[in-house]
Image (cartoon, rainbow, N blue to C red):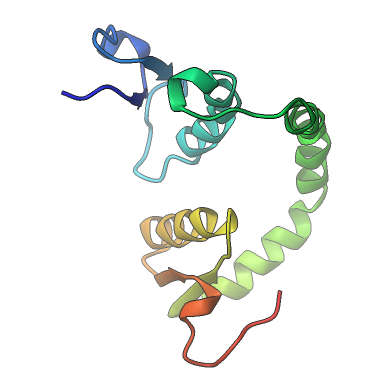
Length: 144
């Protein structure tokens, strides 16, 4: 098996022998198919991965690292803002619940989030959902 990094849901499943980096997500036991906590935990492990530039063949400049650390410090504020939107999110959920199809559009770093959103919607509601890049649209250019 080649060298590289991998993720684990639980650290005790493997001791990581022969791997460059062991990156346990520590999300706990899976309760359902649509495990948002595992996905969120994986996103939270990215800073750890970025802190090991030799292992992944990348180097952050001092400015990029400082900007990244500042952005991480803002995560609790963003989470609080989302929690304040609970009533609006519930209203949106009620509107979406009657839909037969959903399209998630994401560009750049938002594309994997669009994919995950479509997957979660399909798994939980059985609503047909797809994700795509805006460039893939046959409707012409979509503005962001």
